[in-house]
Length: 334
Image (cartoon, rainbow, N blue to C red):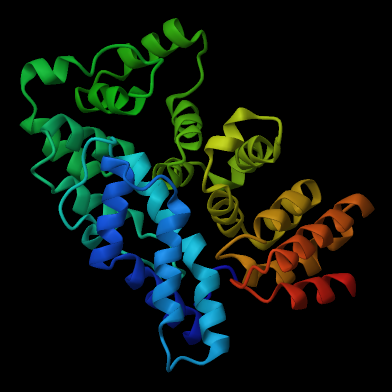
């Protein structure tokens, strides 16, 4: 159910929109936004993509509406990965050609990151840090060998900052985990396993690929409560962490889809509302009703009402990335 391929129309529409976002003129506009600041608002670039769709004179109106609804959610993923990967003083030439897309209209982060790391205009330390950031183990080892001894020594320091993943990989490559664990305990005041600290950092800095790498090392039979720990973090609306987890729906979907059916049921008993709320976001809406039929009995009346209101809001704001009216009607029947 959670690994099925979407219908051909959806695949085609997302392909068209991701291709439009990769156009030369749109790429130039993005460079002006990130580097030159000649464009102040990202929405101006979105409007340029929308205009391309509007100018498809031979396209039926219903398809135009669907395409227009995909411009924002696909574009924001492009924007997020550029911001996460590059500093504001550099973008490679033809950078959109480095992006690979899935049939869901999401970025294939593995292939994209591997392409970015091959950019020899980036200094070797930046390429190594990107490989670490995205947990591309083979690339990490190759790039480590290209670092000078001085550069390697720079990855032996503070485990409190944002470079903790790059530093951790340095110790792992040198087969010195004992020192790494001692530094973690000394500087962070905790004896948490490296894996859990890694999870926290990948959540905090919105890195789904690294998160998947670490989570798949958890024994699901023994580690369901570890999964629940992350559901708990992601449902905490008061947490500053949530604001930085740009891809929270992706993480929720990944965690849930990794579970067996009986584990999903146990998880729904605790986190039905949070899961359904995230399944209202692109591109997971098609899983909403199937999951809601299993989860509905675990929702409070307030939560049921809130979900209906969330859907009504999308309707009132004229979201066209999914048929929200049908979702609302079917949910109201439960």
